[in-house]
Image (cartoon, rainbow, N blue to C red):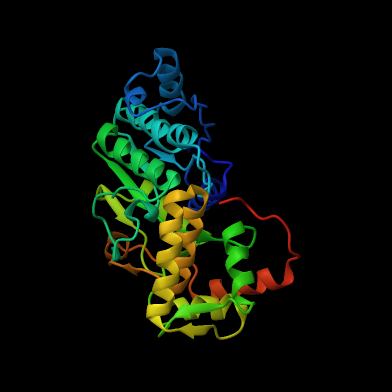
Length: 310
């Protein structure tokens, strides 16, 4: 398990150990910020050998490492952490007999696609998105035959900054959605994401190369109502579209704005999700609507502070 101490990684470790699996926690090697796509094939022999020894005897390598800051604009640093590192781990997994490689990608690689599914990644709309696209491409190109890129949507927990931000919006006069508010929104609880990753790492049948996270049956209005304990106001769709369009244009000239513009668009309009292979393979999410209610209750009782960076 690479990235075992992180937000997603620590939850995956708990899920695997709860299911009786042995977990070897590995610290992700730090790569230079100048790393590029080309450097994904030029790793030093000592580094590769060290990682090979560390994963020897493992049935699967799960990569949950990387830089999760979607607002960061340092292309080189993001490419190293979210792209080239993945290429290194995929290469080492391929050199280990019988090893499955599970790479935790992100739904952000599909950008503004109408439906989130298992189609190939698209060009990223921000530096962060582009780094996640690179990581997914390198995982699938350099990894073993049993390589799977798993795409969770926005992941939530009481201490996560994006979760607390949405909750603050939901409780404020800015609690708005585009009418009618019944559009699906791709959101996931951390316990469900961790369970899905553990399933992909241990299921007997080989997963497909790309697996999207199943819908958690939330709507744009339903999410804000859950987290804010009040009905959001509904904007005419054309007005909401004008606002998000303006933010998207500004994001081209002000890169730090691009990620936040996309978050606003997601809150207002949501995004559809195709049926996931996970559902067809028998995986069931451990936390349903009660899990979301528990999250809302935790956010209301916990004092405001600096949450986990996203």
